[in-house]
Length: 109
Image (cartoon, rainbow, N blue to C red; front, side, top):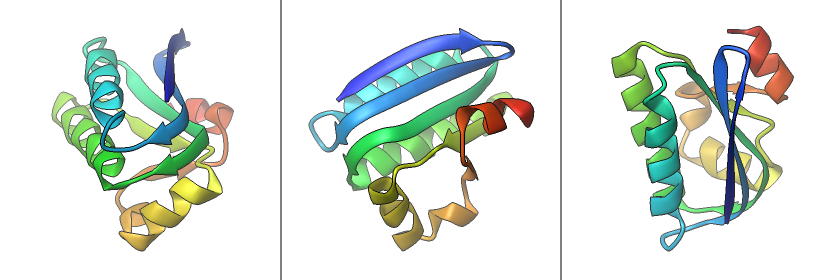
């Protein structure tokens, strides 16, 4: 798994690529929590995620909870089909704000 973090406008973009599983999800969790320290909206780009398991979803949920506590936005952008299946299976598409692109997520900010 690869995680790329960049600032864009009034948001932090966390782009995730590869497989998010029990072995790699702690790295994702740490990156998300660190990114939320800036107190700016967080956009998680999942377009290049090949696979995500429940530990990866848990990392996203923990970051969402922290974003809500900090009262900053949290959006999943361009979620890959494989990741979207897992999100929908858990009915979490009703919990997360999901956009088709990073640009769309930034427009919502």
